[in-house]
Image 1 (cartoon, rainbow, N blue to C red):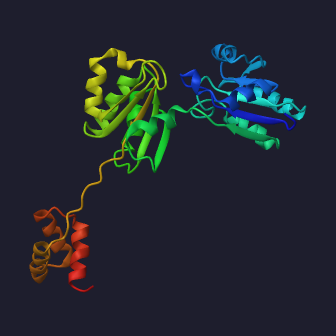
Image 2 (image 1 turned 60 degrees about the horizontal axis):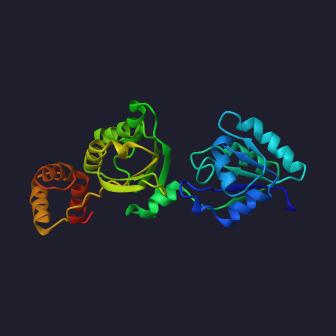
Image 3 (image 1 turned 30 degrees about the horizontal axis):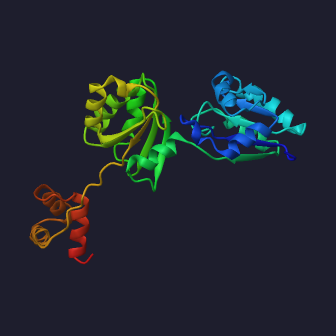
Length: 280
């Protein structure tokens, strides 16, 4: 590799056959691999006969190691960044390193590959034209509930990662805050032996998890569908007639308020309709 470069390399999230040829070649050719946990990544390196030296770069030492890696790049070396599994920086360390390398003027090149987030979305059967990735929900129930309260009327899909010891608590908080009818997809142990993708209402998901403790194990992606859009009742001729009668005796604001008590329409919508009927 002639140009000093930081390669951000995606590795398998379970099935080793998902490792790309380009990823293998990159890890074999760089001068150093920055790994989230060198002990965790050692079997992967052995499987693909990758003998490149590794350096641990994780949440607790990333800022310090970033400067050391920039120094190696300045010396003409190339470095690969990997996480324990999947695409680095997606709820994994690497942000400070990539930022430091870019600021120092060196290239950062993605070696695309597996991502639990994208894999789960691809098989969830929910709208994916717009979604937000939220990472892990807070550990404390009170903080989780605060986050979930902000999603009560969300008009697009939200995706979370979750751990086995918090999955039941997170689903219980979803039930408490969002109600039992909201659609939820649980993608568990993706690409691994016990891969499971299960969908239903939040209430159904809680029942399913409770009934089988095996389904509470492993690594989870939770996909929360958008809140259902309330259907707006059409303003029909009968509503117009009611408004016209009320307007003969009442001011517009009062007429709209009375009509709102007698129809499924909102007061503001009735007020706007009354203005239109009066030609205002």
